[in-house]
Each structure stands twice: as structure tokens, then as C-alpha cells.
Length: 281
Length: 323
Image (cartoon, rainbow over all chains, first blue to last red; front, side):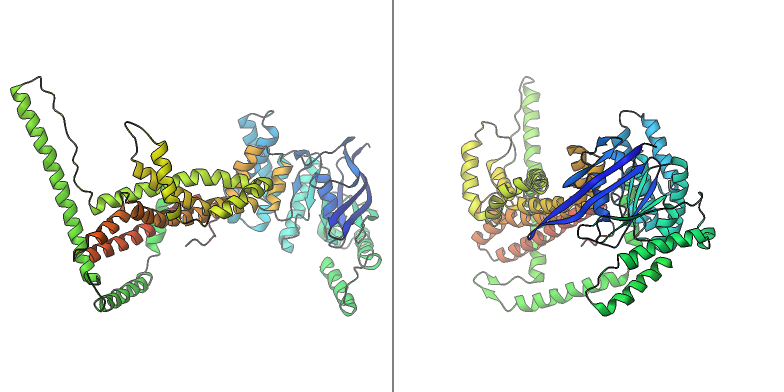
């Protein structure tokens, strides 16, 4: 299979009063069409920075990103982003939020009727047609995130970038949305890069899990291929030895090899095990 | 839902939520104030008699209403006389073309209120038309902001009274017309109001525009919105709450400035009414001035309420507490 998205030797420096700070160092990653890749790592390790570079919101200091063999230049709808806190325009209804994206992308290629159908189709994908005329402050957090996903999908992106899309949601809503996302993914076969700090989410959804080392100068630590049959069912997988093993590998990477050094030594163990429990909950 | 039905819904909502309690405390406050005023006022003696208390003010108010009605009656009669005279002449000589002379009686208290109101609205609208686009530009572009900020900071605190002589002279020098559409006094008052009240709108608009959430800016970038769409769909809606804070401040300032300007420049309006009464110095004067003071306050309050109502309709953030 040809390489769809090629992140090639990307490094980035951020200017600080004390001189440039190297946040990412030599990150390389090749992603195939239709592949679902998760980036996992401790907070502050630069996962979001990688995503923002692919989105074009940040410029890499060294290296670059190739999409279908062409270097990306700035942000664009072919690399749609689902932001962590939905980022819907609060003064527009769900329909209008998706419409803004559709009008921008398909203005020349779709008729008015086609655009309307396309908007409704995408709202239907995330089961949000019932709230098409509601504004973001009138719907729940999970529903907002659904509309955010619909907006991104409506751009028909060649890569879908998701920045901790379910991070701000409660566990039940999150599980629900993960199932929805797997369903959509089965139908559309999108190329997805998703940032997460949830080990279960990563194993459940991904074809590959990219584990990142701690910053500064963070880079790709290990890559785990998740070879589980699709469609995946969270209940059946919970006792699947392969699934358990994958989980253990990610946890080992995060909490042994890349244990975050806490300033207070006494709190270190407590915090680490606390996080581990949370992730397995 | 369209705007009128939204308006009716909110009105209905308010009537349903209306309770005696919500009326009781304001009423109590007003009653206590009137009592203190009555007691306090009777103890202050001036060369024009005792300081007007509520009863005197009420009498003067009736007097002003009466005066207004008398004046209107006089005006009607004046025109009636003219029509009759012309008809009589035409009966004798059918080729006669009559000429109606306009009534030139002195403006009453209510005429002055009307003059002040449209002057303040004209000045305020002109200020908004200038301040909102400039504010948007400043908020969007750091360089424009740096270029204009010193000028804004210097002109912002200038008192209306300092501008007035300059505005008066400039208007007299430049607005020369045989058949003027507006009177010079109107233009002078209006421009003074504009110059003084545009700043809060300008600054708040700029702050609102500059404070658009970073995530929304990223959305705009990912969508590759062009400049116009970006400003119309993202920047302006997001700046609207602060813009309206500015507009309400501006309207308040506009009203205060106008009264001062009218007083100083002897331009028609409530300010002139107050000054004329002061110069007149009759036993009625203080009472009439007090009526004007209350009227100025009441109109200022109403203007703010009108802006608040508009803000409630325009603002997308229905959770925002507006008061």
C-alpha cells in the first residue's frame, strides 16, 4: 500500500525568553489510507503539537509532512480537525455549523439541494438530525462533540485529525461515542489520527498505537500494531487475552519506561498507580 | 422563530414571572426617597425661594404640560386664521395664491425633549457607524492598533466642553448653504456628541474582536475562510456581547454630553431649557429645572433599556447576565 500521510523527520522549536525550546525532535511516521492511528503519551509530551503540525496550524522547524506525496502548506479542509472542546460556533445551530463547512468546501461542486442533503447525511451519521436546529448551548457535551465530528466529516477530509475528541466527556458518553466512531469508520474508511490519553480508547479504536516519549524533545517511542478483528466489541474484548496484552504493553510503556518524573518523590507512586487505575476503569 | 414572536415570547415570560415582591422593594425605595426629598428640600432656602420638593415639581410638571397644550392650541389657531384669510381672499379673487407662514412660537419643554432626543440619536448613530468598523479593524490588526492607540488614548478623556468651540467654528465655516437641510446648532451638538461618545464602542469592539477564542480562529483557518467570511461569520458574532457593552456606555455618555453641550452652546434642547430657566430666575424656575433633571434621568434610563432590549435579541449568549 502506498504511504498516504508521511510525517518525515519533524522537529519543532518554540521561542522562549531563554532561547528556543525543542518540543518535538525527529518525529517520523508513515500512515496508510484508511488506517486509524492513535497518539498516546503523557500530557505535555507534544502529541497535540504533532497533530497541529499535520493540521498546518503550526509550522515544523525541521522536516515536513507529505500528504499523497505533496508537502502540506498551512491548514485546509482536507485535513479536518475535531477539536477537544467541540469548537462549534455558539451563535449557529448544529445545521448551520455543518453548513459553514459544507459551503466552504463544496460551494462550486454541489448544488444547494445537494449541500442540504449532504449536511443532513452527516448529521445523520452522528445521529444528530433531531437537534439540527438547536444551538450548542442547548445540547449536551456529547451531542456537541457529535456535531463537531459531523462538521469535520462533512469536509470529506483525506485525513481526519482528532485532538482528544472525547477527553471532556463522561465515561458513558465517551463509550457511546467511541462505538459511533467505529461504526462511521467502518462505513467511510477514513484515515484518522487521534490523540488520546486513554489506554482503552487507544486499543479499542486503533490499528496502530504510537507511543510518545516525554518531552522536551519528545519523539516516537514505540509503535504497537493492534491486530484485533473488526468490528470490535468492548465487552467481548475485555476478557480477550490479546486485548489485555495490548493494554498491558501500552501501560508498561507509559508507567514504567516513560514514567513521568514528579517533583515530589513521595507523591510519585501514588499518582502513577492512580492514573493506572483510572485508565483501566 | 422570527424576531417579533421571540419578542412576544419574552414579554409573555416576563409577565408570567412578574410578582408582587419584584415590585415591592423598588416601590419602597422610591417612597422613602420622596419622603426624604420632601423633608430635606423644605429646609434649603435659595434666593429663588425654597428648593423644589416633590409637590412643587409635580405642580411645575402640570404647568409645563399646560403650557405645551396652550402653545399647540395657539399654533392651530394661527394656521386656522391663515387658511380662513386665504379662503376669504380666494372667494373674491380666484387667481389669488395664498402663502402659509410657519408658526414661530417659542419651543415648549416637550419640543425641547424631542429636539434633544433626535440630536442624541443622530450623534450616537454617527459615532457607532464610525467606531464599530474602526474597532473591528483595530482588533483584527495589531499594527493598526499600535498606530491608532496613542491617538485614541489622548482623545478619549477630552471633555465635550473643550470640543464645543472648535466644532462650532468648524461647522459655521464649512457648512454654508442657502437652504440648509439641518440647522447649524443641530450639527454642532451632534458632532460634539459623536466625538465624545464614540470611544467606549470603539475600544470595546476592538477588545471583543481581539478576544475571539483561539479554537474558533483555528476552525476558521482549517476551513480556509476568506477574510470577509471570517469577519462576518466568526469575528463579529463573537465580539457582539462586548460591542453592546460599549454601545450602551456610549449612549449613556452621548446623553450626558448632549445636555452639557446644549447648555453651553445655547443649542435647542433640554440643556437650553435648563439654562433658560436658570437665567429667567422666576419663582417657578427651580421647580422647572428639577422637572428637567428628572426627565433627563428618566430618558437616559429609557435609552439604556432600549439598548438592553436590542442586546438581548442580538446576543447569541442567552446565558449571559444582562443588567
